[in-house]
Amino acid sequence: MGYDVIIVGSGPAGISASLYTKRANLKTLILTKRGGTLEKVGKIENYYGLEGTVNGKKLQEIGEKQAKDLGVEIKEEEVLQIEYDTNFIVKTLNHIYEAKTVILATGTARKKGKIKGIRELEGKGVSYCAICDAFFFRGKNVGVIGSREYALHEAQTLLPVVNSVTMFTNGEEMVEKRVEGIQIEEKKIREIRGTECIEEIEFEDNTKRKIDGIFVAMGTASSSDLARKLGVKLDEKNINIMVNDKMETNLPGLYACGDCIGGTLQIAKAVYEGMVAGMSIIELIKKQK
Image (cartoon, rainbow, N blue to C red; front, side, top):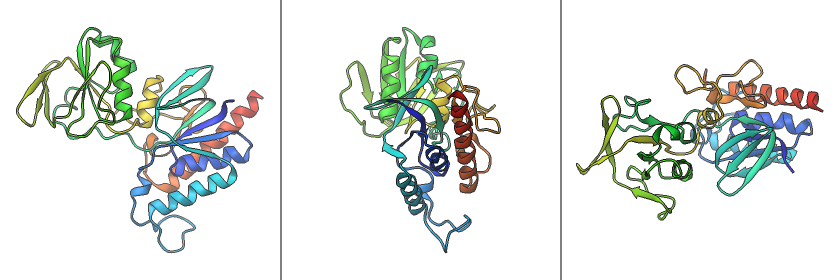
């Protein structure tokens, strides 16, 4: 049985949305990968209703408990991909979920890292979406920068299309050491080089590797990563998700709220936007019924 709404992210925006959808008797699932921005905040003193100060991790725990006590399902699973075919299909490492609607609330976009050459070669061989751009590299030798499940998923998406795939972990340890058909290079990267297009990767030990394309997939998939693969509109910087005043994206049934839509990065704003997204979904599903 599917869900009425799946919320990707358990920060203030996601939890806020879930409180509204669950109270409206909508079957609600939150999928979360720990380690969000809120959990890293040391002291919070400017949020309504707090007596004294509280750290971000404690506020996160309070919010999740409130949602669970209401009956919201919260599962610690990393979302790797979302597809749309009448309903939304949300894929994690080990499970596939189905929902009528989805809210993206995973916070700000993933850091691109401080590897020299990445930003300069965006659109000239550097990509952030395997499913979007694999076609342009058919028969080529490409790399994926990353070491975790999301990077591995991107590499596996590329395999049937390109000539070869190498995962460049940039000094980090791979989550899986042996992956059929995929080469693994753990050297630290100094620079990605090229003029009109990518030509090579230079490592810290002065060795080099010829490469035709690079897909950046460090860390976990951000909301903008997931949105981009669905053809959702992003802002002119290709970072923040574009929404209307109901937190709707240009894809019907897909909503976004919190830091991933830009603006002032504050808890109060995220909670408000989560409320708006939740209420918009309640309205949508009532109309469908």
